[in-house]
Image 1 (cartoon, rainbow, N blue to C red):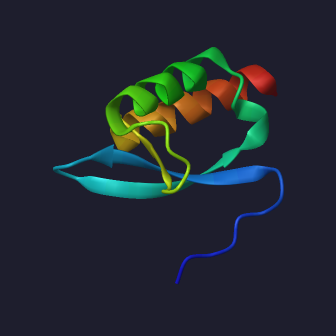
Image 2: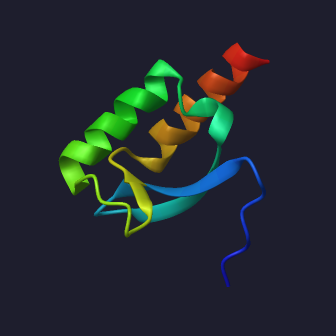
Image 3: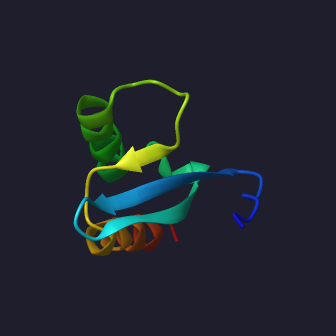
Amino acid sequence: MVSKVKKGCLPGFAGSGDGGFRRFVIPASHLRHPLLVELLTEAGEAYGYTATRPLKLPCSTDDFEDVLWLITEEIF
């Protein structure tokens, strides 16, 4: 069962074909950060810009956790 995403956040997936994808909840406040903008651009190039499927980010789950940590440290 997939849990609901709280207001002000969006669901996304990060991972690779080998390790599979892991679901993340991304705060909307992070969307304009240059690190996440770069990943979103890469995702569009890799998977297309359609909004009919869940957001997938082309990086490992460990790398994405690092990006989220870096963004959170800068914001707070």
